[in-house]
Length: 83
Image 1 (cartoon, helix red, strand yellow):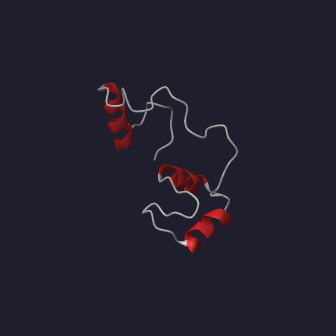
Image 2: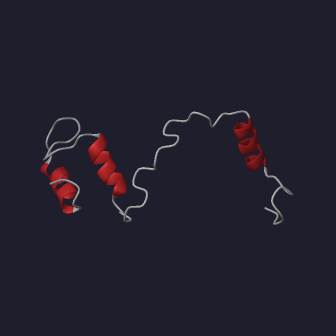
């Protein structure tokens, strides 16, 4: 990618994004104007695990399918995701 003042060179990706913005394709996206979930909080290397557990309603020893698996729960408990 050539280096130069902004606007002097436009990559294909830059052009596609600019055209989409101009045609309003980014208007009214879900979450527009809302804070980004987790922004401003301490970095958490297990953020995705915690989110998955919350989205799938995983509770004390239950897998999302409704069955139980002690190894599965022990691993979640080990990383501090489930109590």
